[in-house]
Length: 408
Ligand code: ADP
Ligand code: ASP
Ligand code: MG
Image 1 (tube, rainbow, N blue to C red):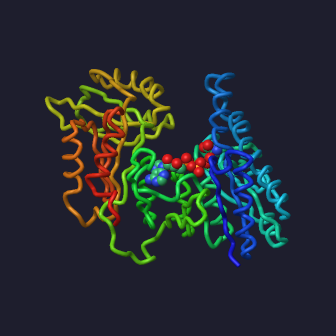
Image 2 (cartoon, protein in one colour):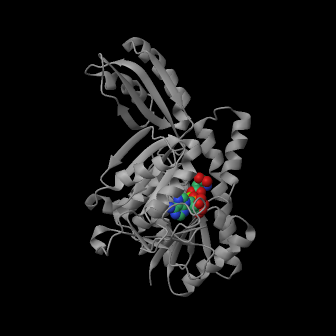
Image 3 (cartoon, rainbow, N blue to C red):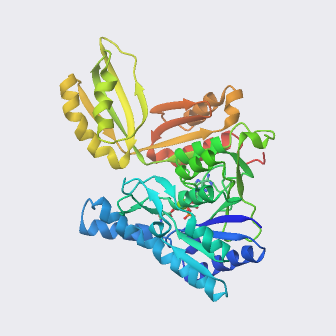
């Protein structure tokens, strides 16, 4: 008998028929003798609908109230799935995040899980219940409802698997695993049988929304056996996230291409080139709680330099406002910005031992006439910032240039 945590995403519970389908799948696992904890998202489109509704009332919705409201999407699906399970003659019990007591910090809309009280879940499991838990939500120490950021149900799933020391965490979604890139953009994308934890971490942080980054972090920290699979295909084996100690087979050089257009770029021109200037610019940005991603500073000339960085698009306008007085104070020439950018990244642990990956990427983009605005690299990834309108083209040509459509 194994303890399995399954998580079903929005599309997988998008209608009453689909919820019944999920119930039948869960029932099958239980019949095979396993204990099941099932985490569900809101029905597809529901979270977006709720967020839009809030914005009709308040242009910048109050974060506490936003979490109270947006967490209701998942509350609906846990009850519906429990009913569907009961209808199959099984015993099931639903829990909201606060009923479980998924304790988080108080950072509304992007809270972090700090502790999970497993007592109720363990008791129910030992009594033969299927436990159904609302994804994406928790409760802070003062009893306020919090949510974990978009895609946060993945994190609920993996965190529960870690807390319960589950044998496996299965993330059921609308694709049958992790692909070399988003199959909706590149139909030739190929499913990966395995992907290393490090690569998955990069893919998620660089934009592949198939797993929320924090769920991958949890999986790494607590060594959760994590698999991504299809909720629609019966025989899907999906993609297993592996760790170094799993023993590496022949490793492909490049595993995938990730992309996002969630960022905006800000450039300060004519900055005096002297010690402390990066701190003077980025200090106030950090103090305002804005996360900075890529940073580029040019080689100075005539005592002046240019300084560019990217922030999340939702922080763009605010960051420009913060920088106006800063630029005046340091006597910079001008602050410019643009939010029509995209970041495209090539990811692979094999990059460590292969030279020439960067030049292949740059040549491929040059051949399409795509201008690179910023570059950042690590041991296992190369990211470029380009004009948003070339994003899909860049993903397609890079995918082809690295031979990702061919079986590994
Ligand atoms: P869920 O609602 O089940 O959580 P998401 O929409 O959050 O599903 O994530 C699944 C989607 O992630 C897929 O439909 C796919 O379009 C997208 N995606 C992006 N990159 C990848 C990738 N490398 N492999 C698989 N899917 C990807
Ligand atoms: N319903 C939430 C969202 O749409 C959480 C999730 O689906 O993982 O982001
Ligand atoms: Mg998701």
